[in-house]
Amino acid sequence: MALWLSAMTSNPDSATTPTVAILVLNYHQPEATLACVQSLLAREGTGTRVIWIENDAAQSRGRAETLLNDSGIQWTQVNPSIDPLPPAGTVAYLPNPENLGYGGGNNVGLRWIHRLGVPFAWVLNNDTLLRAGSSAELVSAAEARPEVGLWGMRILSDVFEGYIGGLIKMKDFGVLYIGDPDLLDNPHTFISGCTMFMRTELAASVGFIPEEYFLYYEDPAFSLEIRRRGHRLSVVPEVEVFHHENFSTGRRSPLTEYYNRRNRWHFIRTYFPEKFKRQVFREPYVLQRFLFRGKLDRIRIEYLAWRDYQGGRLGRCTRKL
Image 1 (cartoon, rainbow, N blue to C red):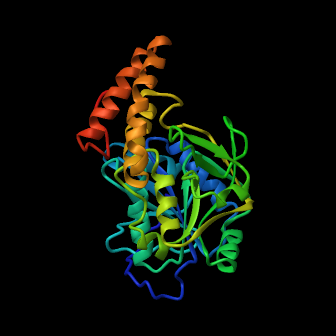
Image 2 (cartoon, rainbow, N blue to C red):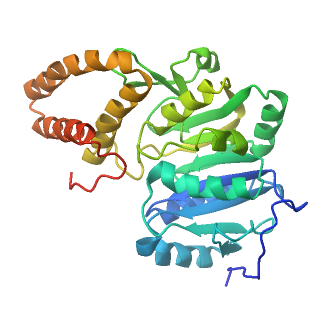
């Protein structure tokens, strides 16, 4: 069996504390997550620890653990309340019994490594593969430019052209993907949550990744919080990942559309309250456009998203969409 077990005691000040922890959040896609983890282990050194975070582990852990055992990877289950990180070369398997969403799931790992004194965190989607570079280039860039609070990298995709993040369009608060690093000087741009690198202490100072979104708009919100602390955004293009877009939720699925629309309202009210009323006035035209195109399902999703936002229903959606 590939499972590594030993008696472990927490010691954040130990000389063996790694420089970087890479957080990979899995939700019912263990095959993709395993491929991502394997791509990391092939390139990362002894100063890095890979953490497999299992959302909804009460339902999914059996399949994931079987896959890990069969893979030959050395791994150990951890309790973030009491355990230290495992030794070099061993993947930490962190089960969250419930589905905590993107922010909530990753934040369990971020709070853990912050408690243990790991200086840098790399949050990486499970539907990615590391194709070039490693965390060594990210650490070098971060140490050379302490004014940068959040780092992106080059993302290749099976849907979009190569990009590093996005631009929030002030007309409708939709997202335009960007690939030019110079555009990150625009205050309305953000680093993609698909892959972002940060100082753990800075992430803690802003309250970690906003959890109320559950899915979508967390990355622009997190980037704006980093900017509010006086830090800049930048990119390390030497590090390259491939991203299978919308692997878990499905492109243009009702789930995707619901979270995008509901969270958009919350994002506007939180960061651009002066624009909120104008967006409300635009909404009848949005619904009219869907009606003319016969997209009655989109009208329903739009209505539910607005009603839930108005009712203060953020976080995980329990509706059947």
